[in-house]
Image (cartoon, rainbow, N blue to C red; front, side, top):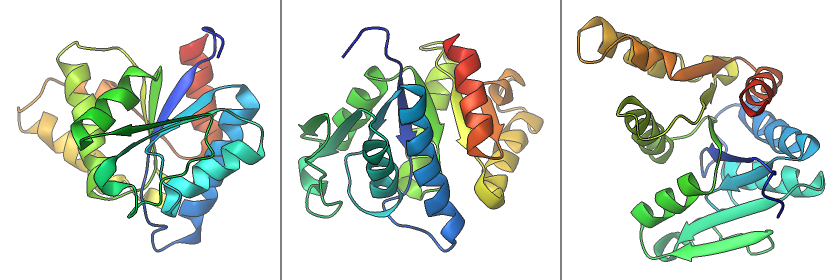
Length: 185
């Protein structure tokens, strides 16, 4: 891989969720990443939105870098036909490897794991440990409660207003592409 290739870590669900729009957004994200020449970094699953984003990236000719812990290999159906495939011992190692191999983070709809990943990179950003863009793809308003929670944290004095500035909320994949293009120059 060329050192100039940018990598985008996508956090998303290992399920499809209740609305077809979530899977469409995942496929559109994968297609967009490949079209822009950016590598997908993700949790290496072949199920749910993870599988959708990875397959779409591959079909469009993009590079894929998957990271999965041993204990989730069967549950998330580890996708072995990726450009790069890493198996870790723990979830902590998985998150570290994903983060260290990306230039930006995009959060698609997901569950507890996606929230864990989001808050970890947001906290690291707040602490000055990185300056990577964090983009929340708010498909059909899925993340409205999350955005309201971040606003509430600031309003109630538990974080500086800059916390909100560390997160870009994108209504669609075109807005994600535009923000990443701006960040990558």
